[in-house]
Length: 227
Image 1 (cartoon, helix red, strand yellow):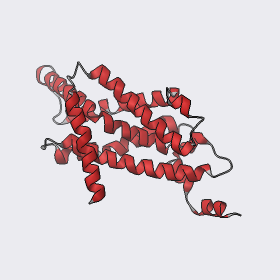
Image 2 (image 1 turned 30 degrees about the vertical axis):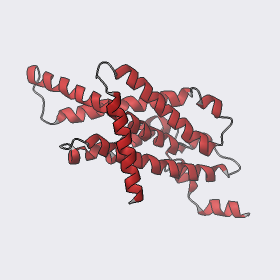
Image 3 (image 1 turned 90 degrees about the vertical axis):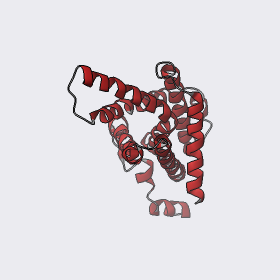
Image 4 (image 1 turned 135 degrees about the horizontal axis):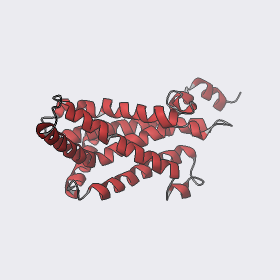
């Protein structure tokens, strides 16, 4: 055996690229993968909402945590997909770690829009509960979060399936360990554009606030990495 093959036998490549063998399960990409992404998003983002709910910067705090998670998944995915590519035969359909990265990154760049939707849904919910129904206290947040999170995930999956421009042009010109991450980034950007266009007027989105959010989370991540 040459050195490359020996290294591949020592490094646990498959668990990372298939995200702990989820990619090897036929229904994994359609059922388990969105569920895992959903749990990761709640664990690293929305679960911290209660800790910072009284602060004005809670969206920046959540976005910072999710951006850090995205960076970690991006680095791990790039390295292990590169190692995975060194094998003589492999199934690219099994590689799903970049799809999890893509879904989390989608939340990062759409979080201000999702927050506007969340606030709007809670407002409607509270009006209905006050005027029409008798609702349990505290359920508005849960209903809002479980309503808005599937939206960007579903859009991401749609764009990932159809592979729009420029992904369809890059698929044959870039190595897999580069293309999979680039494709996920473009899918996330498409989701951001669609959500912004659809929700801009109904939820009175402020472009300045969104730009400020991006600057804040990037600055926070840089401070964390340099500290």
